[in-house]
Length: 469
Image (cartoon, rainbow, N blue to C red; front, side, top):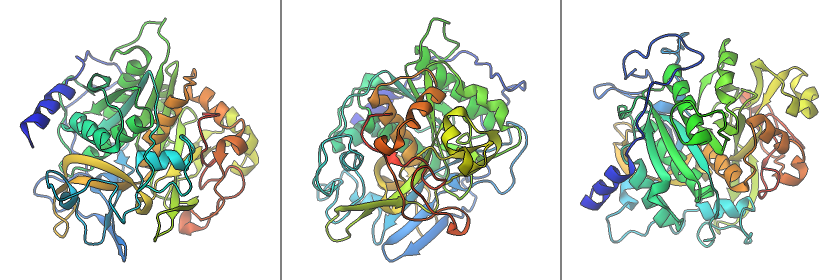
C-alpha cells in the first residue's frame, strides 16, 4: 500500500467519540469486546467454504455467510451471518486485475458483463435508459441523494474509507471525504474478521449505498462482533446518527433524515419480536437482507423493516445486452414464523395466509453470476486452493440488494416518518413503480414460482425509477 493510501486510512477512519449506549432490549453487561464468531476462522483453523464450480467459474460462499449449525439463545451467543456470495470467473483472480499493475485496465473489463453503478442504474430506470444497458458502454451514474445513510456491520475494515474513494474514482462517482465516517460501537476499532468476509461486506455496503446516493452522508457503524447484542446495540447507534448526527439519544425535537442498511441476518427465533422496537426510531427507514437460502431470516421479517430479496439479471453472453430479469433461486423469502401481517400488506393477506408477515418486499440483482463490482483492500480468505487475495471482486447475495435499495430510497427523497410509512408507499402502486418479475423459481427444492404481483420469490419486484420509493 502506498503512503498516500495509508494517509487516506488515517483521514477516513476516524470515529465519533462514543458514550455508553443502553440497549432497550437487553439487561446484561457488555462483556468482552470481542466475541469470536463460530463462522469466522482463527489463524490456525481450517475453513470450509461452500464452492460451486462450473464452466463459467466458481461461486464462493465465505465463512461469514454460512449460518451457524447451532444457534445460541442469549444475545451474546446468537450469531448473525452476512448475505454475500462471490463469483470467480474461470482462470481469474482479483489480484491479477488490481492496481498497481500498469498493464491492467480497471473494470468494466472487456468480455465481462458484471454490473457497474451505471449499468444497474440503467436497468432500473434511475438514469436515461440506453438499449441493452451494457456495462461496457453505459457511463451515466446516479446523482443526488442527501441527508444520511448509516450502515451496520460487524468487525473492522480499516480500508473502508480509502476503498470507497478508490471505487468512486474508478466508477466515475463523485466522492467527498467529509461525507464518509466510520463509527465504532465502543469508541475503539473492533478486531478484523480473519476470514475477510465481514470486511468485504463492509466494502460492498458502503460502495453501493454511495453509488446510488452519492450526495448522502455515509456512516459505517462497526459492531464489536456479529452477535445479537453488539449488532443491535450498533443499530441503535446508527439510528441516532441518522436522526440527529449523534451516537447517543437524540433530542425529542430531532427529525429523521435517512436510512439504515443491514446486510446480515439470523435464523428466525421465537423472541425476535422483542427486537422490533429497535427499528422504530422516528424518521428512520430500515432496509435488511432477505438472506441467501430459501426461507426467512430476521430482521428482514420484522414489519418495521423493508426486506430486500434477490433477482438474476440475464444478459446476452456474446454482447452483454440486457435480456430479462428472473427470480434468484437462492434468495430468501416466505412467511414469517413469528411476525404478524402489517397493515401495508393487507392487499396480499390471502397469499400469506391472512395473519403472517410475508417477505421479501422488493428484490434487486443479487445473483453472484450476475454480480456487482466491489473493490476491497482487506485480505479475503478463500481456502488452500484459492489463497488470500485483495482487489476487484464480483459480489452477489441479498447483501447487494440491501444497500443498493437503501441508496435508491435516499435518492428518491421521500424521507418518510418510518419504515412502515415507506412500505405503505411501496405497496400503493407496485404495477407502476416496480418491474414485476414472473420468471424463474425459488424456495425449498426451487418449488415456488414468481407470479403476477407480489410473491415470495421477488416481493413487489425490482425498482422502476424513483417514483413510489
